[in-house]
Image (cartoon, rainbow, N blue to C red; front, side, top):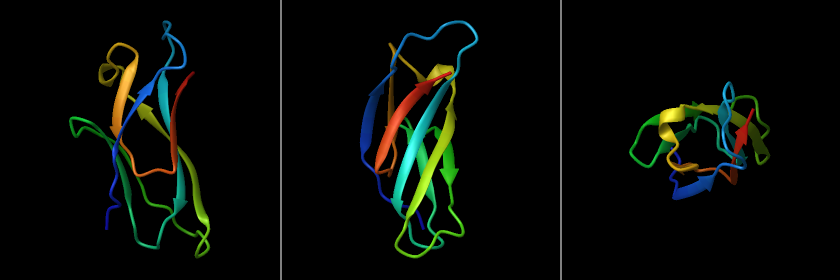
Length: 92
């Protein structure tokens, strides 16, 4: 079963330079067993799916990092549908 999510627009913390990549950090709250979290762009392109296992009942599922294809970033922004307690972009 998938979790519902709202659209969130994120801004890159800095301009991209040659050789750098962008990652989406998604911190999950409590996720019931068997649930799957899908993170997509506003247009529906799947960035990744998270299916935590081995989490104790009632505890937060942790933080996960997903790669973001450069083509998904427009004018330093990325709009995602992510059912996460907190999301941010990381440039490495």
